[in-house]
Image (tube, rainbow, N blue to C red):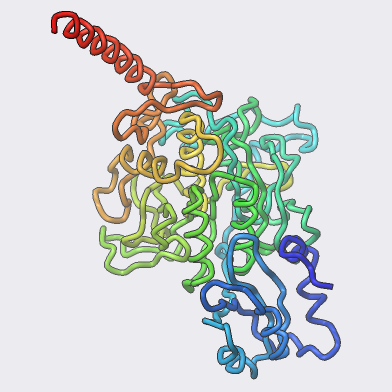
Length: 453
């Protein structure tokens, strides 16, 4: 039976790939290569048949991208490349978080009964929330969907509200997006922990968080799973796609997925990487990981509490913004709280501020990604004065005025903007009123001129 593209996609988390590879006549896993197969002209056509003809098995297709993932016998790769309709083949490389990521549990924030939310400690904002000014603006992000592409999120954490999600790893069923590692829950807390007087609060506490599990319980994954997460966010119109992860190799397949999502109006953000820097203000030696280096991704470097660049932070010409990243208090799996460091922690600060801007723009669904990105970069606060910070430190105060409306909207020409209910809002309303008055006056003048010839 031929499965639909969506059925194949949903089946990944349930171990479909492992199942099909075990069928009679297939090569053993040690003799195969997991690869992306790109058809000529972007036409899938008979691609599945071509893969099968060289003894391979297609394990994953996508709804929005015209390439497939397949397991191919290592000794048949040349035959696949030479087959009609095949443009290119590339390895499905690994991505993930650093192996040494180790949050420090905070005993002072441990409740007597972690399952009883009433016993959790009083809410406190991290120094990062305060430094970017997120504690000084109205809690926001309402109706904005944020995909946390990570190790999952603990769905019943007392400081979090998870709107839904999907698992694209082999660790569990597709519906099992629970975080059994801790990284994804920490990232989610930074981006959008709820404002409920318990534990911690996030940058955009009213945003809808989605647990898109693309990394396994060890914090590791493949580009194919990351792409599946992006594909799912596109299908579900999740506006912001936050990726606190990275890989060593560039990927044509991942690049195409990013470009397609960006063209559809989604804003993609990524940690710059934890590969370190020279510490001299130079970006001559680029240390960033992928996909942060892609031009359609907002890349985030990390700083310390004393406004210095974190020694672990990757740098490079593609860095867009700086954000707090060292000793950040947030939620972790097990209904606990911990301090953790990394550019993966800096990234969700920017994601949260992006959600604030997106929400106050009144945008409903994907669309204003470039306008929001421009707002973030043009209002950033210079801190380091070097290339290492990109445009500077993300600044929630600067992007939102006292009334909670966007200061530097892409009202590039100050055109009126419409809210979710279709009304004109903010500075756009004022300009629209002036334009209406001007039109009335012009009409009167023209009428008077007509009376007197």
